[in-house]
Each structure stands twice: as structure tokens, then as C-alpha cells.
Image (cartoon, rainbow over all chains, first blue to last red; front, side, top):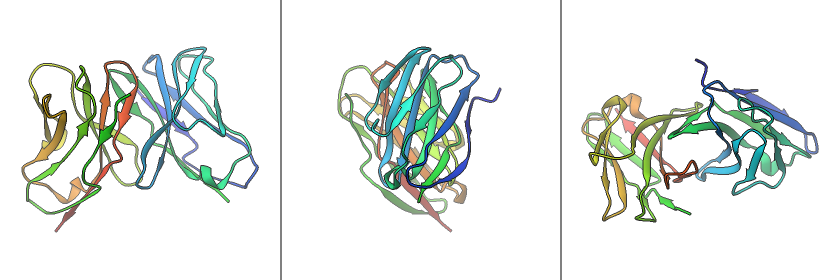
Amino acid sequence: NAGVTQTPKFRILKIGQSMTLQCTQDMNHNYMYWYRQDPGMGLKLIYYSVGAGITDKGEVPNGYNVSRSTTEDFPLRLELAAPSQTSVYFCASSFNSYTFGSGTRLTVV
Amino acid sequence: AQSVTQLDSQVPVFEEAPVELRCNYSSSVSVYLFWYVQYPNQGLQLLLKYLSGSTLVKGINGFEAEFNKSQTSFHLRKPSVHISDTAEYFCAVSDRGNQFYFGTGTSLTVIP
């Protein structure tokens, strides 16, 4: 039982590049989330999904896009990466409580 | 929407001393309450949760928390900390939906 799996663990992007952060869960949870974590700022919700085909914006959605074609997968897309997107990104799924992935550390230079 | 306040951003404590990490939330409507722990360079792990029933909740690694509805608090306690408890601790609240609201975290440093 893998839980929530995120890839890659680390990535360095140049300004203006794009990339997709992958997230997969094997617990059949309907709810999935993307957060970013910046030092001293806690967790900020980027996007969330309540089930396949349904997504909605969180607190800080600008510069990101998501899709949810299956229950298992919830990829996060960064278009035109900016230094302000340097952060640690966590994917989570939930049923009464959250299960988090191990995170993706992204640096935009 | 809920808001969650963790009153202490950093808590240093000597090894084997007791510790309390404070958490208050904004609304008194029925809520679920959680504490998560994040060790360096890792994801968040569930420490304990309150869904209903006894207001004193016991979690992993000897931690416990008490739900106080009148004070809208959910403080985390441990009677004797170890070096291995050094980590970031996050309080979270759910209004019984599936959206969670997190505090900004408390960095616990255990001093040998």
C-alpha cells in the first residue's frame, strides 16, 4: 500500500520553463489536494479536487493548473515558471484525515 | 472558513521536559481536529485526531491533545520529550467537510 506518491522529489527549473508534478494515490480517495509550503508560512492550498473530472481553486492558484481524469491521479502543471514558485509542494488525499505525499522540492532560477 | 492559530512559532525545550504546543481555531461549530508532524525533509504524518467522543485524544509517540470546545482550542502535550521529537508540528481543522485549514506550524527543538 503506497499511499500518496509524488514525483519528482527534486527539480530545478529555469524561469519560463514548464513542468508537471505528478501525484498518485492508491487508497481510492475522492478528495485530493495540492499545497505549497514556504518557510514560516505553513501550507497554502493551490488546487483541490472532490472527484474525477472536478477541480477547484484554493488560496493560491495563480500560475498553476490541474486536471483529474482518474480517481488515482492529480497532476499539477506549472506554466512559465517564476522564482516566486520556488517552494516545496505536497500532494494529499483525504477520507476523514489527510494522507500526504513526501513532497517535491522545486527551485526556479 | 476556519482560521487556525498556532501561538508559538518556535518552542525550545530541554530533553525529558514536558511540552505544550498551542492551537486555537476560529469557529465553535462542529469540527474535526488534527495534529500533524513533519520531520526534516519529509512529508506530514498524522500524529492524532479528534473526530468525536472523549475530548482527550492520544496519538503516536506519547503525544496527546485535549479538545476544549468553549475555548476553541486543541493543545498538544507530551510529558517528556526526546531528541527525536524535534520537528515541525501543524494543527489542522476541518469543518467536517473534506477541506482542511492548517496553522502556520510550530517548530519544536529538543535540546540535549
